[in-house]
Length: 120
Length: 186
Image (cartoon, one colour):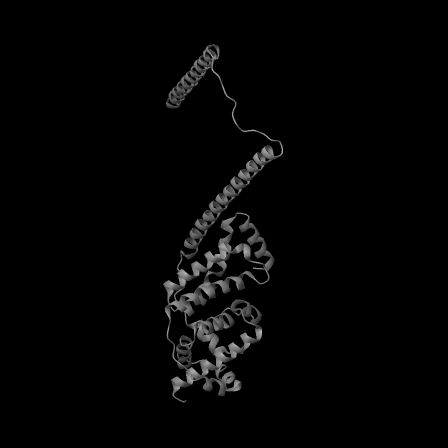
C-alpha cells in the first residue's frame, strides 16, 4: 500500500489551480478582524463581570450594615432657618464664581494655545 | 516545523501576537487547499472553505491540547468543514456493487497500482478518483500526497488506526473496480 506509485502519480499530476496569491493576505485580514472581535468580547465580559462583582459587594455591604449593625439609611430632616439660608446663598455664590473663573481660564488657555499653534 | 516550535508559536498567538498565525497560514495553506479542493471539486469553494478552516482553527486555538501535531489538528478541522459543505450539496455518486469490491484480491490491486505509468491509466485513475466519496478522496490525498502516517490519519478522521488501514485498502480496491468498469472487463 505504501508504494502504489500509479495513485501517487495521478494525484500529483491532477493539478488543480493553485491557491490564489492573496490568499494568505485575505486570510490574515480576517484573522485580525476575528482577533479584534475576540478582544472586544473579552473586554465586554470583563466589564460585565467586574460590574456584577461590584454590585454584589455593594449589596453585601448594605446587607451587613443593615442586618448586623442596624444601620438606618433614612436621611435626617433638615430645617432651614434664615441664617442657614444666607450661608447657603453665600456657598452658591462662591461656587458660581469658581465655575466662572475656571471657564474663563479654560477659554483663555485655548485662545493662547491656538495663537501659539498658529505662530509655529 | 517541530511540535515544540509550534507550541511556542501557539503560546505567543494566545498571548496576543496575532500576526504569528501567518506562519501556519503560510505553511499549511497549500496542503489544506489541495485536500479540500479534491473533496469539493471547485477552486472558489475550496478557497473559501480553506479560509473558514483557518479561521476556525484560530478561534479554537486555546482548545488545541498538543496531543497531536498542529497540522493534524488543522486537517481535522479542514476535513470537517469540507464534509459539512459536501453534505449540504448532496452530490450523487455512481453506485458500486459492494460484492465486487470484496472479491478483488490484494495482490491484484498491488500489482495493478505498481505498474509503470501510462497516459491512459492515469486518465482512468483520475476519473475513478473523482467518483470516490468525500472521505475516501480526503483519505488518499492525505496518505499519498501529504504522506501522513496512519496514526495521524486516524486522528484527522476520528477513527482507529485499524479502521483507517481497512478504509485505505477498501478505497484502493474500489479504485481498481472503477477502472475495470471503465475497461469494460466486468
